[in-house]
Image (tube, rainbow, N blue to C red):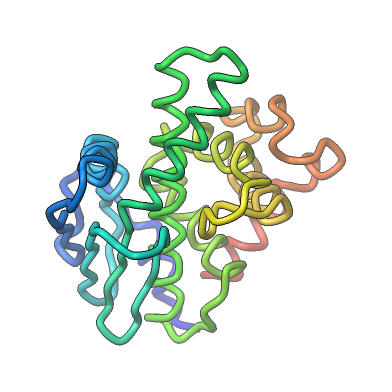
Length: 224
């Protein structure tokens, strides 16, 4: 495993312009719903990053037949589908309405979900470009580290949104209770005081929370 990998993952200047190795393109939307999703994704700022990449990567937001987000290692392209953005937004809006949460809470959750989605795909990109097997677990480990470095203010909202979406199917890599708990545990373990809300919200199982700092440190050391 390359010794420079940890530096690649963690070298990020907060508040900096997007990494010169990563370009983002928003293709025109083909319907009013897709246009709304395009604006939601663009306004969220979820696709901006200061993470330094070993090779150039293109991020394309576009219309697709199916709601998905993908990483193409051959073309080094991350694709985010407007239909997936729309589905995430509708699902979280429905959850917030059930809880009688306000619009600000809904928007924060949507931004957190889109940020988690992008960092999962960024994690896949970093893993495969550094010769590691492509898998959801590996991508989530990278995603936790890049998110913590790149967007610390969205760590809590990303953990919350993924927890809320974990039981819903068809949401690409945001579905899955076990995967959500592991992701939340790594984020919480990076700083249990700063990110105490993750444990308080129950987004990581209470019996697992005390071990999260060790889990985070093991992942950080393994990737390095």
